[in-house]
Image (cartoon, rainbow, N blue to C red):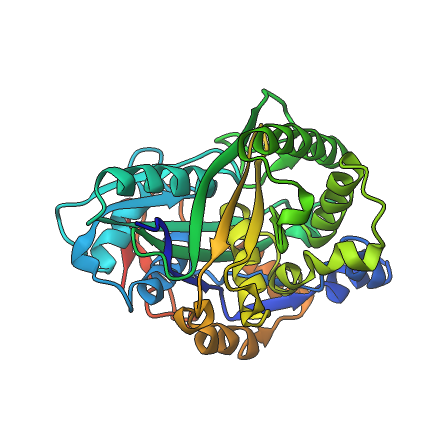
Length: 386
């Protein structure tokens, strides 16, 4: 039994803004973002796309090659929830027409909850090897126009099916955990955008990484050199570079920068042109790593560091399966990235400032999304999808 990722896919809106437009608005050179934080473009969700429609689009693709009749659990991980009671995954369950014999819940702990779903899924499959678990991670990162966090926004979803028939990544049983009550990033119910202490958050991220790594290393017996590649949570690409260099420093490794960066660079490519997608960002990095590497990664070990502000973090690992690329919808993903439309700053700001009615009044939304599923509108406080 090889428990792990059987299928894996992502979905992003077809609209984006180049960060040079935001730089111009701030009277700053584009290199402030291109080089300073390692970000170039940012996905923008139109009014008829939300975490549910994006999640359903990613999940639909992930389910194309699996026996969906065996899916008896659906975890929806997000920090952009649309309802204080009903799980976003219940909408996805209906849109995908999954079996009614399916537990469906929503998980929340900042950007970490996708990893929580992954670990819960492996435990369930270990007990029920004939089952499959669908995990959807979907978010729209918002920090406010003209805020310091504005260039690290983004939108998108990653979906995966976990089973005893791993075809992409086998998950190893080792882990390192860290939890601490800190206020580095949070979003109260009464705000539509997050509050963040950027410098403090970076320091907590590094502290959590060091603690998780030490526990993981003690459990597994592995060292830095046992990993072919490293994937990190990506609030912005430069964060992964900083974290990776700090980890090498912790191990007293005096490696050339180019050699260190080679271990992570392929995992940053998609994040640079999509932006931060919270719960899904680590796994977008995994997809980027796998789709832009060749088959030399087969049978190689990957390291993962998942961080959720507030904070909870985990370090874990997995082995890449043979022929992994043949089980990824690479052509579909490249089409999504290639066929996007660039927005100017005014268009982007209009989409950003759009909001659904807060009194539950009827609203029909024009079709802008190109996805299979979209948000159709609101009626009597109910979200309508088609």
